[in-house]
Picture 1: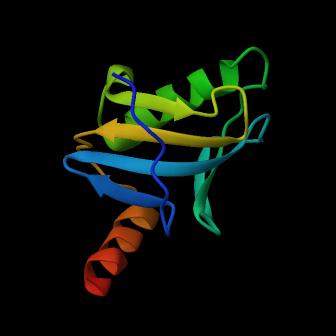
Picture 2: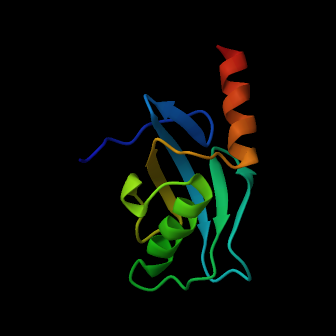
Length: 110
């Protein structure tokens, strides 16, 4: 299923039961890590090198573990060959603290 890009005021939002994330990828990093927000993107570092989309594939596998989902539950909406990405994560079982904090701020605004 293909989704249109969502324009978001922060790096994450809910679309029904799907978490939408804007990501600033950092390939060839020293370690895999979910970093801090940078504008309306979340910085995610991975050790994989950016060759033929391999860093994005690796990032999806890394994030699947972090969110408690399968790799099939994560869709790369755009940015497979770019550091700027948007991902859709269907029914995440876990939320890293930086994301749960941001989502609780979004709820308080409404």
